[in-house]
Amino acid sequence: MARKRKPQRRRYGSVRRLPSGRWQARYPDASGELRAAPETFETKTDAEIWLTQTEADQTRGDWIAPNAGAVNFLAYATKWIDERGLAATTDELYRRLLRLHLEPTLGALLVNEISPSKVRSWRAERLTATGATTVAKSYRLLKAIMETAVDDELIRRNPCRIRGAGREEADERPIATIEQVFDLADAIGLRWRLMILLGAFASMRPEELAELRRKDIDWDEGAVWVKRAAPELTTGRRVLGDPKSRAGKREIVLPQFVLTDLRQHLEWFAEPGPEGLVFVGERGAPFRRSTFGRKYRKARTKVGLPDDFRFYDLRGTGNTLAADTGAKLKDLMVRAGHSSERAQLIYQHSKKRHQRKIASAMDADVRRQREEAVERGEQAGELATVHRLIVRGSASEVPEEVADAAEQ
Image 1: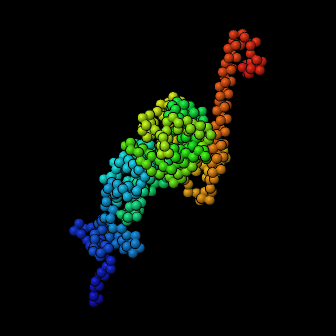
Image 2 (image 1 turned 135 degrees about the vertical axis):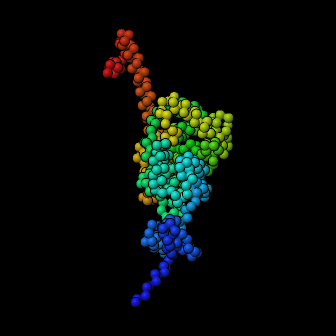
Image 3 (image 1 turned 45 degrees about the horizontal axis):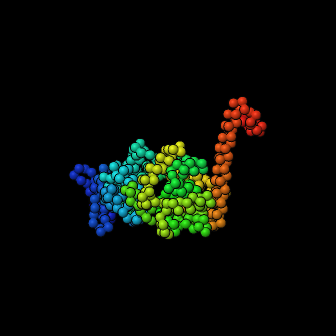
């Protein structure tokens, strides 16, 4: 009679039946100690398949301990921001997005509990509660945090897998006409007039203007240097540092008509000395976004620009004018302080003569359009006088060619 063969002992881990009738798989951790699988199985075969897959993952180096991601998401995300060394404005933005848009739904979860389905549900809820741009920003932040969790071997795959969810589909921004820019500059008053002109025709950002100093003006070249920026946080704190991007440090050649306003502004309003700030408030304090914002909104309403027309939108006027001069893309990028990763642009260089050409062409274009506007205004006034004379029956006082134009 053949002897009954003993079941062969497993080479990796173990499987046993529990009193409940379900099966438990145990696997060796990095120290060799047996750990129970995070779940039990209906059949012995299911438990053995799980062990086989776990062994394969450990062999390939893809294995992550089931409890590795048992870390509170809010604590992990906060630490993630702390360790990034972000610019003050970016740090403030990330913490606001975390507090307002991630924490309420995901803050109490463990990192390994955030699944693709939970991410989809969170995003759908946010889209009903706030704007698509804010949701895209929040999604990008969440995706970056979870990608670091993958690198830290807390989870195997990033649960943020919604294609295009981090892309912002913002509406096209409005662009002011040249006349609207000058009307806005007139409406805001002499102290802040130059800020409007530099925002539009030099493509300077408000935080760059806030830190512009006398020593940054090169009268020989007719240019200003952007070397620093002083953005203002929502707390009111001014943070002195570098411009928005590496390309933000730049020399901007100004159109001649802006240089005229610049000379007058320095004489009347700027602080004295090379270190003197170009823009200061009525009481001599540094530029404050909140104070200027009130004056800007009042002037915007007076001119009739839309309520959503931001100071940043003034850059669109200058960038469009510069593009109309036929300048190279790289020259436009240098002037506006934009960065790009396109390989072909690495080998293009913006020479100062190109910047002078842009400034000169912008100056000529603005002067031409303003002269045409004045002529239209004078012609309109002349025609109105002609009409009054004709109505009075004094047509004999009207030159023949002017009367013909009036009747047309």
